[in-house]
Image: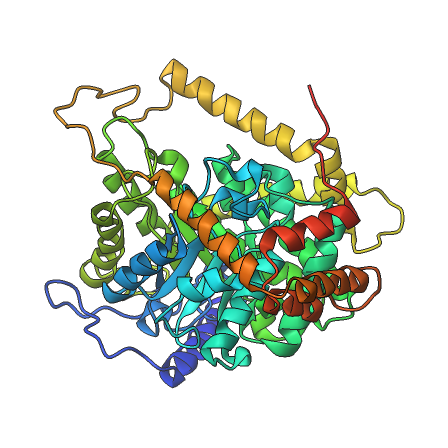
Length: 562
């Protein structure tokens, strides 16, 4: 790129920066030194390939979506929380919001994640242990009691039964008197990554895609600010994928959902801004920063050149980040505070839009109040004390970071090509990337590659080529055993008792009729969301709704592979 083109780009950035709203804050160093909001090549110099780096707020968005960076708005502190019953989790939410958290992120227990009620035999011993138990819309009401759903953004990390759980959230909002069109937040709903990594599915892929397509249509029409899909790479990385695999599999899944929207006749410029992403931030500092920068660039180019998006917001890859749970160690767990801080800083320097920081004890149990506060304060120290919010993409132009960004992007593109090849050359009902993903799931292609990457890393650990402090080096310690949070068995007993009371007090005939109506709608081309909402309003439970759909669509069984 020649000097004149770079100067023209800087002028465009400056005009947009000047016109944008900035926070009323001190943007100087700790010593009082004034810093510019962005840095680039010296005036009058050429920089080959600068069009791939560019300026913040301008295609290809390598350096961020907004010309102001974090000077305009800092990332949202969105701490992931959920345990026990809805009342206990509600108290934790109020603590997080009161301590300065900017958004909520709901962790559900395993029965809820699998579409089972708390009184289901398969739920025995699991209720409230890895998240909050939600059986009915009444649980959602309790979960958000005293929290204005119109005034807080809410993320829900659930995929298999995401649509009925979201309907419960909508009914809870209705009962608060909230205008549903004003709701803002994110539902995960990403079923592809369940088959690839996390294994929390209900049906075969096709019925899940039917529900996701219905949800996309409904949100585009009725709740335009709410993001019905958060395409998740986090769980793919936690399963053992490399950074490039996490990036490629996640964006490929995102392209699949774009194809799903297009197959429904939706306008990509209208529905693509409703897609968001969820990435892992691991402990290799520069690799993670490069991954985030490459992600924005790839998404913008593919949405424009492959899927025909023309609006700026449709090209934006907005993402939430969580620090790497798999990097936490049970040995010397206080070291996890350091790991989490490094990972959080990488996410921030990579331009994350929201962030969750893991607590030091999460490898042992759910966080205590104290460890949850330390995790929250980690973000606040980064935001308030370090100066990282003063300059957009401060590592842009670094020879190492730019080379690493290019390398990860190139690896991702090679993987995209292989996935599309898996789909074959025939007609594609939804789209070529979707066909490749479905074939890759069926053949175990994704799980096989992730397993191989995990094995290679484990071998490196055992040989000592890769090191983890407190695990295979520097193992001596004076640290004492941690006090951890334990979920009482009384939580499960109480949840079952309350559920039995709710079932006894409702109109069973109305529930049966509403659930039957939902199934009938599922046999047509009609959107299923309104009928599912009616079932939830009648107090149908999550298990009843999911069991009716399981009876209709069957249950997915992963093929045995050797």
